Length: 167
Image (cartoon, rainbow, N blue to C red; front, top):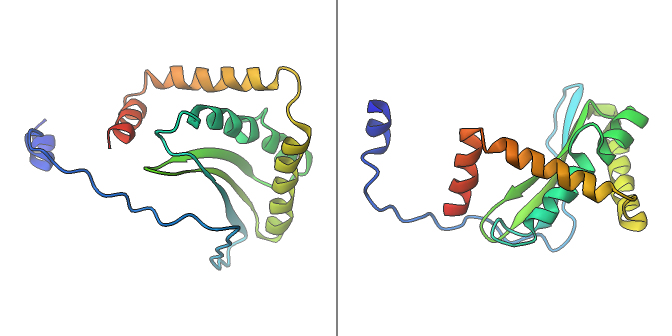
């Protein structure tokens, strides 16, 4: 308590929230490359999405879970298990004021980076063209709900949830 008071004061002072610092969204595809001479590359593929205040954020969590939310997700099964391209693959929904991003991230052997991006694009394209299988959405809705319920018992997750929405 003493350390918190020293670091943050009494907490009674009113502090103006910071202005949003997000830049203008890209007008189309963009690519950023950082040279790394390692044998392992980290890929992050981002797509613009609604902000944390948009009611469409929960369906995007389900979409993210369906694509890369664990060992039964499409990207995990298709990119990692079936093709053996990636060490891991996952999705995350990044929430900001005024905008958000659906992120697909993966770690791959450097020489498989281009092939992995192509495989991710194929899996996403297959979802767009073919849609979902019977029961698939319901399964991932349940996965998201279970994760949200589990987070009720994790103080830092709850602090993050309420903190982001408060700011």
